[in-house]
Length: 460
Figure 1: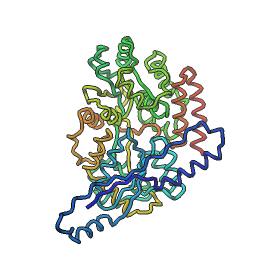
Figure 2: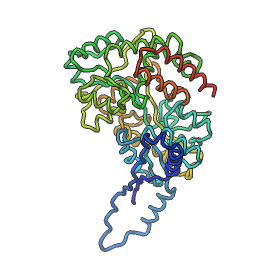
Figure 3: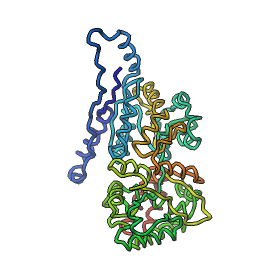
Figure 4: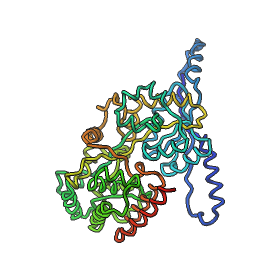
């Protein structure tokens, strides 16, 4: 039996054509803006088994293969590039026997726009990766998803996944997103740099973090790396400063528009962030780098740590770093002992397009993605935590195993900023965070502008 996993343009072709038409219409004003390059399309096929020299393969063997492939091609769109575990998707798809997974990977940032264009144009992939929370809520509200109750039933997601993760996939009272991996945001650090600075105990309070940063800076190394070129990595600083000083309940109000970006809670959080920037603790020109640049700065000793999700471990594993020896993490410290301990991170999942060309095959693929072995395979490759409780987590490396324990110890689990507030509002905040890293001196003006834009986005 041949198991094939293809990568080709498929549903992405009309999206690229639309992008090209828009670019042409924009003229010279956008001539300097590089277009997202389409992923290369390749076909990988397991080598066929060598047939016996003197006998023909039984006729029934061909019938079995035909039956196993009877659900046909299932088109798959995702945002997992080589630095985010693309090989893990190929490995999981390679064991899908009910059909053929035809994959069109898209660069992470480009995916955010291109999938919306494909959904709106009525030619989306059958299955696509997406983030639980406000982004999935938005495409659900726009009628672009169909329920995946059958997949939840067949894979018994109801009993095999923790209730919080089951709930993350429910929209409108029905399952619309299958959790595939979840993450934990923390300070990921270089143990060698810490040791050279004389830090043997990781900070657990804000005062201890500031003191440790001063100690690291005294060695000529920047304490914090941040690559906010694409804005989203800066959100983790805002998220934790709000969560640790004002608490999850206030943050939920801010995310829903019930609180204001000009509230004193936001001012206090931004002032604390500014104090750390003004102290020279951050690598210069954060907005010139992306998250992998920041990861490299920590890996090569230019910086001690970066506030990032567990997917950074997959990136570091891929460049030869060893967990515990070359990297580890500690939780974002307590800033107010009266505030509950909130964990932070995204949940990656798979959704079924309302306009899927092969919904039956897509549902079978979702069942495949829900299996514990497949979730673990992906988690080990990407640096994620598997949602299926039956996954053999003893195979996680020590750093990821510790992350799983820390998630379990948290009082609550919050989505990061751009998954916790509606997408138009998220754009407002992400712009504010990036502008803050450019110049935090007048952050009151940024607050006022963000509040006005957020009110407009909520009402729009």
